[in-house]
Each structure stands twice: as structure tokens, then as C-alpha cells.
Amino acid sequence: MSSERNKHLAREFFACFTTGDIAGALDRMTDDATWWLPGKPGQLPIIGEQTKEQMARLFQAMTSQLDNGRLPMTVKSIIAEGDQVALQAESHGQLRNGRVYNQEYHFALTFRDDKVAAVREYLDTQHVFATWFAP
Image 1 (cartoon, rainbow, N blue to C red):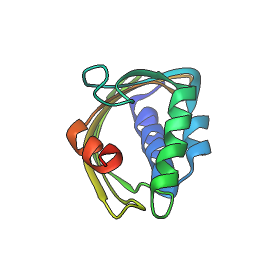
Image 2 (image 1 turned 135 degrees about the vertical axis):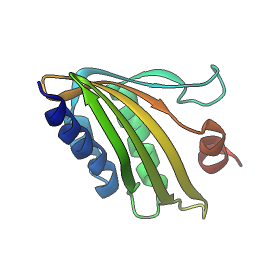
Image 3 (image 1 turned 30 degrees about the horizontal axis):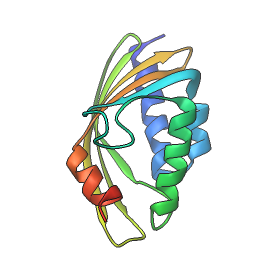
Image 4 (image 1 turned 45 degrees about the horizontal axis):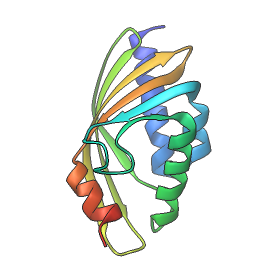
């Protein structure tokens, strides 16, 4: 699989979040896909490695808290080598609680058979807590 093809697939994958197409994002993941987020256990309920099923529940919970059910994401840069894609992105969403979620990300994606097989997501976990989980 070519690096250019994987970059295209990565852009399509993140476009699903911008349009609120969670089913489309999940369809672009392998059945055994994993998603990892940094942090200490217990810091946030989303820390560590999650399965596709766990991420599906998280995506649904997130979209239900967003004003318009979408989390617009802008890809700022993308590089690829073989089945590995590194992507910088920014999101900007309004939550129903009035808070604004403006996050900077680095994603390391692994592709297999034209689908996302693994995601390592690096982001500001303190901003995640303050926006999504703080009272």
C-alpha cells in the first residue's frame, strides 16, 4: 500500500469527525483496531489502549455532548511512510455545556488493508478534563 494512499485514507478518516459521521469513521477501522491515549491510569476514563468497541461508545458520548454533533477537525500536516501516517490536526467544537473544545493533536496511525488498525493520539489531557469532565 502506498504512502500517498494512506495519507488520503487518513484525511478521509478525520473528515468523518468534522461531519459527525461516526459510523463512517468506525467503518474505516479494522475490527481489531486499537486507540491509545497518554496519561496515568485513573486520570481520565479514556487513558490507555481502547478497543474499537470502546471507541465507538466514546465517539457516541462525545457527539451527544457537542452542540451540533460534530467535532470539526483541520489537518495541519501529514507525512507517511508505508503503512504509518503521522498527522497534526486541530479541532474546534462547542459543547452543550457552553465550553469550547479547541485541541491540538498529533496522531500516529497504522493502516492495514486500507483501514486504520491502530491510533496513538497525543493531546492536552488537562484540556480534555477541563472541557469534558470537570464539574
